[in-house]
Length: 195
Length: 195
DNA sequence: CGAGTCACAATACAGTCGCAATGTATGGTC
DNA sequence: GACCATACATTGCGACTGTATTGTGACTCG
Image (cartoon, rainbow over the protein chains, first blue to last red):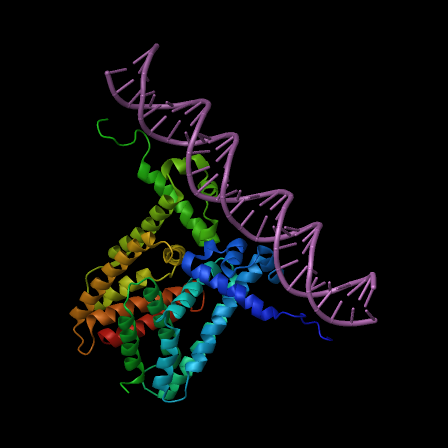
């Protein structure tokens, strides 16, 4: 081999395997339960291997968070089939809400990291960028809907906040899934018309 | 003294002193930095004293969270001067948002505990109860406003979610304070009329 | 066919954790 | 003044943490 890549194993793949273990641990037992040994046990490998692929715990955490964020983003984009702005926005936001077990897991992880990122600003940048991206997209769609009397930027920010809050309440079981969807639909009807 | 109260010191007061230290630590360095020793150091006392007033760390955490929730609730009630439903709701929700440093601190703590409570359900009950209480109040006010076409329960849930999300984005500096207030006002105008 | 790099495993280490046990000083009760 | 519960302070312990170090096969390259 000429390039400096690894010889027989796929680094990325291994790191994602470990990050999956991080995610499961964080979601089921909290971020504080995420230690190198626990991650290794959860993934069924030795702690030495974890250290081999992540030189430090911070590196592991950052990678895991990035992976979760990427997955959410990818799934959101996959759900965005170009129909009406209304459907586009609705599908996108529904994809972000924790309405099934895997998304609950992911949102759980994001929440844990969000609380953690308030202390470690290096983690927050990824979150912020991803949110800004989605806000811009939402604003475009609201603008395309062309309802007069609504400021697209403002509406997008409001929608994003609403979805964040709904996700929060879904995670803590304060809201049933239908209620959350209904609340979102009501808001969409107000902003984008009853179409 | 006849009653079984403590002799010279006020238990409640001491516990609140320690819980204040917990809150400062949680807000500035994260929940994971909250240890008996750190709390003791932050409060300027010995770790033995912390143990004297809280038999276990869990007890300390639960008390601290309850204290924060109570403070937020008390301040909200204090802000509720009976004028129009619109003003009532607006003042209440504005009081919940992290718009100054102390409220940032408190919201920060609530967020940290919220992430933690997903794992320890015993902590979540207090949060849930407090939220349900506020939701009922909001629904009453929306009903009193009597805008037709809006379901009060649904609108209250939506408002609560919106405020939660706005708080989240304020904490992570994704939103400026004026933007958050503007988003809230826009939503209130939609729900309660432009009054 | 050495030489070397990669992928991992195992262990050691210094530090911190929650918690329990113990010591002591101080006030109230009789 | 004897007695005792309260209010701390101190110390120690076992478990656990992240990280550094070292060892060991396997595979590649010259």
